[in-house]
Length: 114
Image (cartoon, one colour):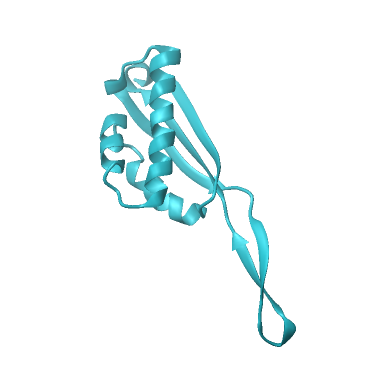
């Protein structure tokens, strides 16, 4: 059975978030949770919160065992980009793109997949 958790509109660029989501792809959920606790990045905290939510969804809503969950999919996609301007030389304006992202984690119980 697949269990989904999505965190939307995180104010961080998807490129920075993808570095962390790629690290945990294919790991056991408990091992990924322990690994993310020691990653010194702000993006790791957001991914950890999404992973904890996915684990809680699996345990509470579907009655799955926490030890048998694996990360099938961990994706960071682009969200809304806020566009701002800063003054530049000779009256021109420089663009500032404040990017956001959505984090999606899908867990699966291996016993039902095989």
